[in-house]
Image (cartoon, rainbow, N blue to C red; front, top):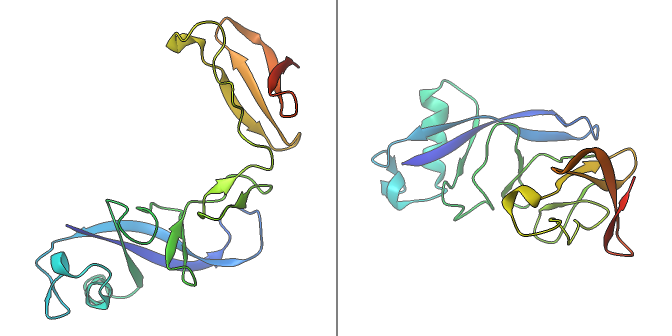
Length: 163
């Protein structure tokens, strides 16, 4: 099966910028037997015939093929993803205004993710519940044994400190 994303030009849906992006509205599945490039969609990934077929079948719209197996255009997209035509990739939505794309086009926080994610034993219940605090520009956590006490990640000491 071939998967296609319908794109719509709109202002950054995250609200982090005023830039206009090609934003995924929906992803549909099309049979591999549709004619494309002298063969079928199943034999011709990213062929414009598939995009044309979608536009004709759905009576308009801008369409790009996405790979369910992440074989092309970086990753399988979903509603709200952005299609970057210069890079010919689907990018996940920017999670926070302060985050930036790295060299692999993955969003990274301005502070590296904590290296310590558990406390005590390696019991699955001993994992911190880690989240990003955009206002404080830091990683915060709670643990299951003390859900009232909060912790902040000290990136220079590589340790959690009581908040």
